Image (tube, rainbow, N blue to C red):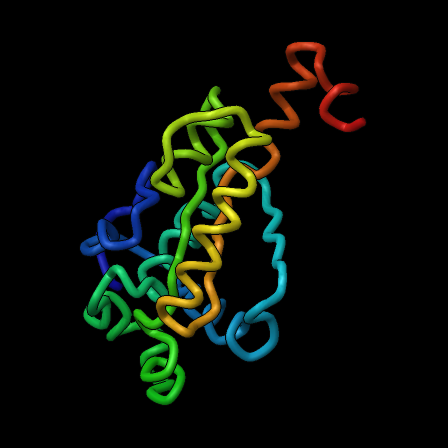
Length: 165
């Protein structure tokens, strides 16, 4: 993607058209070749592009995106036709953003559930993931943004010991 401006504040991958963009689609190949089915933790400082990278991964892998090919045509991943044919828009993807103030609401909305206490949500989320896998026959991909935010909030409000124990 070539452009004339820097994409300050843009964290939605399809919105990058017309902006300068450092191609990070190599991350897709790395995940597929070495890490698919495993837990991956991407740690970077604030404003380093983690949310944008998760958006890129979501648009590449998500079966709900139908055909996201045009978004990747001019990126390095476009050179790997076999990988694109097998994995692009082929996986159930759940995107969970924990950056808000309401942990239960974030989880419930990501899994299309009504808000409930976390101990009631957990088994329902597990059921949803299993249903997605059974329905598609593909591994589900769970993308979690701001994974550390709930821990920071509990520390801020003096509930850290309750969370950790």
